[in-house]
Length: 436
Image 1: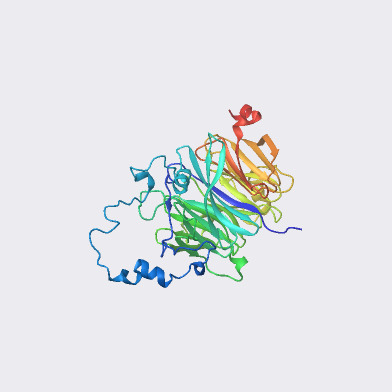
Image 2 (image 1 turned 90 degrees about the vertical axis):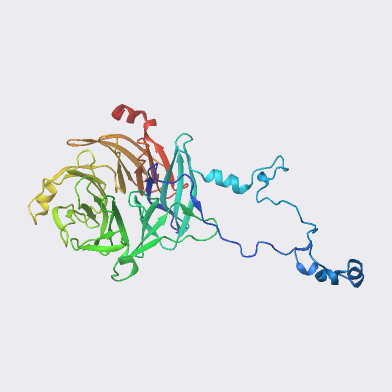
């Protein structure tokens, strides 16, 4: 029985206009580009030494004594680094390097997708190009990762230019580190190193320090991280420094999200089924609102409703989607009253809701993945209505993300058959009837 791990654990789209069309290729310099000639059998020993008669005939022992003059045989010969630059060369075929460079160039219709892929127990940060016109998703380049990766986050900021967005992503791993990769640097020969690394404070064994979730706050250039060590940390990305450790949780923090409009407000869901709204201005993190859904309702994903930012979606391990209003909470210490503040709870999958994604352009449209199924929902005042559901041939599904440039396109990551798949939900007639 094959027990090797295969999955897409996390994925993020890079918005168009951020990623560079021509990525910089880091190549190794060859120290000795001119190799000695090799004999017909591939061995230098197959070349016979010149005989005495040959030395006498060609006066080989006098070669070093000859004076070099301007009448040397190579005088006046022009050398071109590329055959296409030589005016005397015709019908020149394009080199593989030129062809590869053309294939690597991003078109205006291409969108970059970064995904954490583990296949045969080997992990990598893989960069895909998605072309909607061709409906094609292809690998552009990748970076090998030494640890099992858990979460990837787009860092929309260039440290070298305060007003520019960068091609950076942060990768959280099971070793308790956050590594930053510049997606415009890649190399087909050597392992490209991350541009910088943040190490979380160690507590116990490696598994206990795993970084489970991250959220980027663009306006403050702050990265929040939550981990298996129950720590909620705030990092200043410009200074690459830990600026605050919020001691507001006693559970593993599995999903976090910054409020879309209110500064320093963070939503945090735990593996113990709790949800907290945290005020990050307070030194230890003041909890403004909290819910306790029970131990079986492990929180897998949290998302603010961008069309009603007083509310949020919560995907739980018990198969239920909960929609909460942060303005309505129960009395402190009363789990029953806290649960009553949920606007609605709907069982969306038989076993678990692994992840959810919101469409930021189409109001009330969100999707969930659980087991092998992708489900498309419409948010309603008293619940959510199923618009479409289908079983995908990707095994167990772990992640789903909408494309910011193409509101009808999402990507789903699973465990089988290439592990990842883009889907245009506008092709589903039932979705068109509900939303279009």
